[in-house]
Image 1 (cartoon, rainbow, N blue to C red):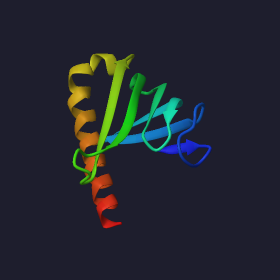
Image 2: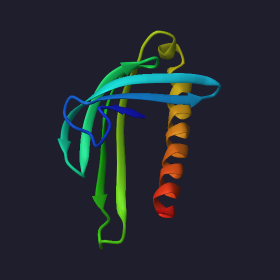
Image 3: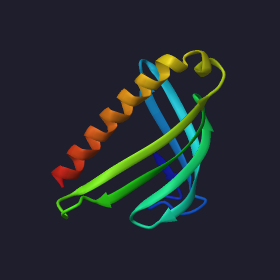
Image 4: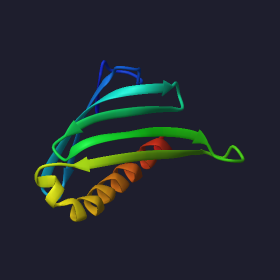
Amino acid sequence: MTPDPPGPPAPGSRIHEVLKLAGRRFTTDSTVGDVDPGVSYSFAGAGTSGDIRGRRTVMPKPGGDGSVFTYTIELEPRGTARALGPLLVPLLRSGLQKDLKRLKALLEAG
């Protein structure tokens, strides 16, 4: 992910994402919508796989021991991606789960 301008999400910020999956490269360009600083932001845009919108949220875990990261995404495939729809969901889910595991390891390493 590459935000423009660099830094935390702000309304109107642009985000360029590249996901390498199953030997293919998927790119998405989106714009940040509403922001709750330090907690969540929404985004919407389009890319090689179709139209996309979603939200990223970080909330304290009940009991105060850590945090919970939630990533909600809605994808409306178009073009070639539409035909691959049934295969695209598990591939994207797998790629996102790997990204989240890497993020967790980086955060835990300090």
